[in-house]
Length: 340
Image 1 (cartoon, one colour):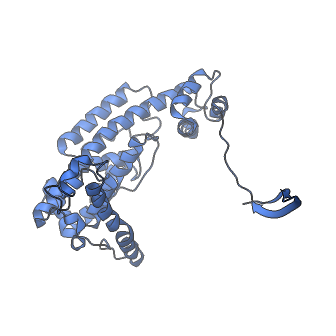
Image 2 (cartoon, helix red, strand yellow):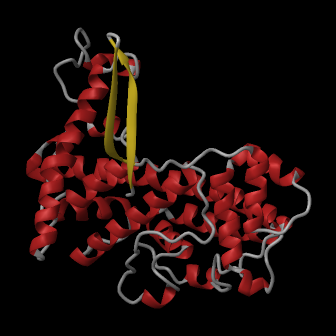
Image 3 (cartoon, helix red, strand yellow):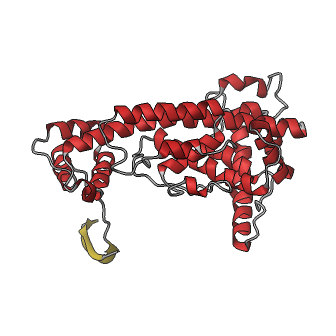
């Protein structure tokens, strides 16, 4: 960071004074008006009149819209030209609809997995507040690598478990935010009880839920899968891979919920089940999120996702396959994904 010289002078109690010192120059980005934002969009897309671009900029903001422009410009070798504003609008419109569709299904996956986690564990050990008891967790996550093991333990002890207890306490104590939980406060019929998992998990963010699952002891992780899915012989590898599926769904949920660009987005690594590696094109693209969704969703919702996505692609003006948003044979690949 550059060093800049500063001076301050003035009069105090009738006596002139002068200070001279060195300081660190602060580098701040400056805000720009709408016309300048429209001009900057010309770095990415071709247009003559600013009217349409400015209308979309008012709605989206420059940073968000420029991500789409930058993405399309990076694909100019495919379209053999600098993208124009029509392509920008088509890409943005398709992305909005794509996020809406996937958000519907990540919500389904979240609700279903929360239910499996609640029932699979609480029924096995007959403990409604198991999530607040350290005995049911493996802080190291069973890692063999010394650094990973230590990192997991530090996160569990210094972050995750304390935050979990704080979240449960907040549900009981914050009367203004959670008036419906008054039974668990002073004077309530359950004032001496902790909030059971089936109630607490309804309020916890999906990231909290995925952490609870990832830190559970191995036999409890298996009980979740046995309760929610189709087999009775889930091994350690599957329970580990399920962590990556849940992370993928969580990251997809966050992109959709915060209205960020989804097309061309890469995210956390998805590990496929044994024998299914050739189904994926890459393990960080959008189709890998679909792989994770099909594993976690029930069969009916998983099948409906394919139908709804096919309809959206057929109606779109934006060419999904030209820009490698999904592989052209995604339906065939999707059909080959086995149920969990």
